[in-house]
Image (tube, rainbow, N blue to C red; front, side, top):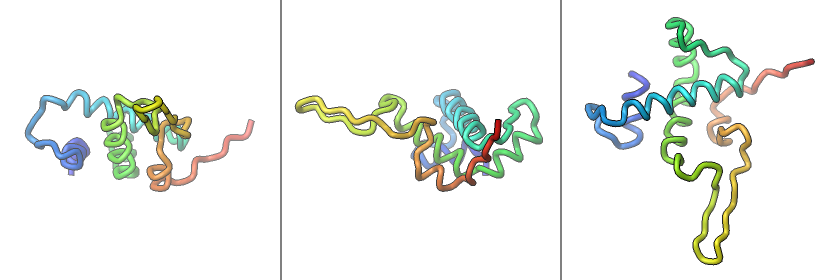
Length: 113
């Protein structure tokens, strides 16, 4: 199944509606870059073979991260918000990948300098 179609289905969108495809594709690309940076696994968007291999390898994590980012695009960095007495709690994740999605990925490689 195509990655964009799966994301639309999980977000409850009509798969034939193309009005938000640009935003969804942008979110998917950002997810791939975040995962690539986290794992230190090279993602080459211009190489079709490498792109397909990366998408196949991390299919579920890419979609889950894109779904998470799409749903939380207005609340960037905010974990909890209360209106009364104005309490705001910020997310712990510094790399933008929630722990439930990190659990779907292999451990990142260690770089020695």
